Image 1 (cartoon, helix red, strand yellow):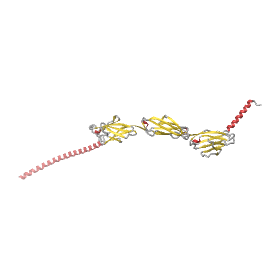
Image 2 (image 1 turned 90 degrees about the horizontal axis):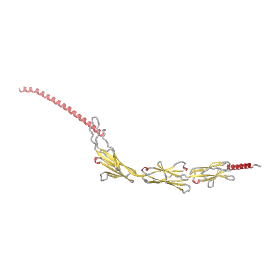
Image 3 (image 1 turned 45 degrees about the horizontal axis):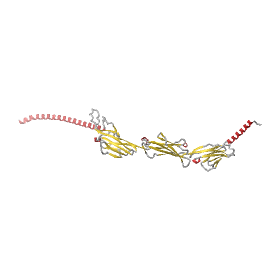
Image 4 (image 1 turned 120 degrees about the vertical axis):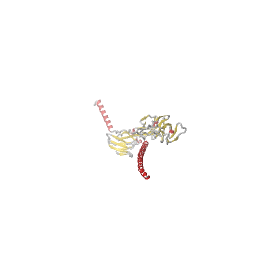
Length: 413
């Protein structure tokens, strides 16, 4: 009779051998995750098939493949490998309805099965931004909404303005009509300034189905702000008698479309139109004064001022020989300002470098001087010649007279 301890050892070894036998005949599978439109591969393996065949069936318990034999007419489902120890199939162009538990069966006595859970991820659509369609006035609140549909599970949305992250005011998740995917909405609010005009606001959707690829939408903000204006003279240093144009350069969003020109001290306005240029065809001293441009847009008005002072420069002293005289011409002194203050612009100094006109005059003067010099020299030579010629004539007359006197005396005798 066997000892009790040895008997227990034999029983345990027999049980272990039975468990090992069952494990070798147990099929094994793995859960899979796939995105919609992708391909999933289902692999079923067994160590000891016990002369039985493997079979794959879908969540609806429809047989897909029994060994090498196709059981369901679906061209998306293909056989990848079939051996006594392995049955591998693939499903392409996966849709949301393909999600569920797939069963691998080994037809032994009893039948052994293994489950494989297929999870189908819904890819979120490109997000859309709403609320930017109309311009926003400066210092007002911008209220923007970002929305993305078709995600499974629900996606995450985040905001950015330029390179700065924006914190959202709340997120809403709504189930789509198909009952499988979700629509996610996110809202942001922030106060806009003039600098936010043309700023880029970006909404990005994050989801595991994107596999670290970014999917985002960017929109530019349109911000309306008050106009600014400054007056620019053309030419910058106008001279008396020249043409002068004053350009009222108005900036803003929207750009000013109405310009009112006035002269301080004058009752009637000079010009009111969409033309920002005030023209002086022939500048003279009576045009001196302060000119005011009022630029107006839908966001308000702004005033710019320009001080015009037309005066003569003092006569320059006569230059020394071999020096080049500078022209003595009247110039205008101008200064510009916006609103109620302005800073005088530098006065143009008289330059000893001749202009083209003064050089031309100098050349003409030199030519005239040479001609006068030649005429004077000619007159002097001619006068000297006439004086000498007259003296010779007088001496010749005296000689003739002296010769004629004896002949006259002889005739009288």
